[in-house]
Image (cartoon, rainbow, N blue to C red):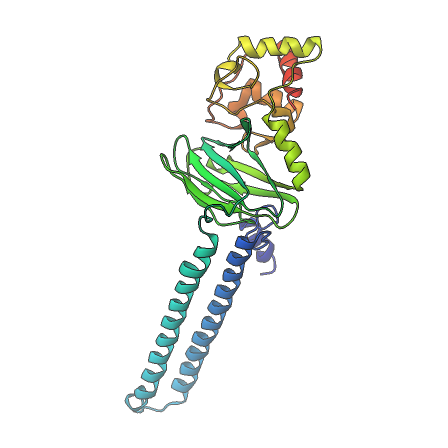
Length: 327
């Protein structure tokens, strides 16, 4: 029996990386509070029902033959009372959930947010665009200023996805041809994990992202840098890598601002080296992993839209040197 406890926690994927019950924003705290009230109500209801069942069992065991019909009137009152309590509890829960909490976590009022981020779902990665800037775009890692209300515009280029950061707010679907909105607000500096919560195909489970809540000054510096075009390669090897990128298949699918590469199939790579992860948080953004992804991405994330790239050793090393300089 004791061994079942850690096994249950393992199966439930308990942890702090994506924990609804470890809220770090006002909306998420409201949702977590409702959960605890619901849990308390369910425990109370279970205790009452269990007590009535035990009482009925004890009383029935003490009753003699022929006395059952005469005892039913009292039990009918108890049953009706119990049903009434449950109905009232459900009505209250409905009001709290669908009126009070939904109102607090709903689309923010116009003008109430200080920043807008467009979250665009792709099979299977996230693109984050910052309207109002000189086209600052990144992938799989959203940055927001801490203690600042941020409007998230959820969109999709293909099927239905879901933007969900459990520690900051409830989930919201991305519907083809529709723009849905939600607010994110982080109480403290940190990194919060998000996840697509709507099944969207083979790699749905590997469609995650991070939200970095930065101090305002650090966020502004990051945003200014992201809005700039790509840095020119320094060194002979990086310049050779730029040539590999531009003359090969890479430039047909990816954009690097400030260069002739304007592909829209894959993520924007203008500042690729500034990210900590790749492929929807599937692998870390390190040289060895990036090289493996370029040569054989289907082995790492089967079914993704990137074909395996056939490069020899010198070409790969040159390309990695160029991509490593895109900070």
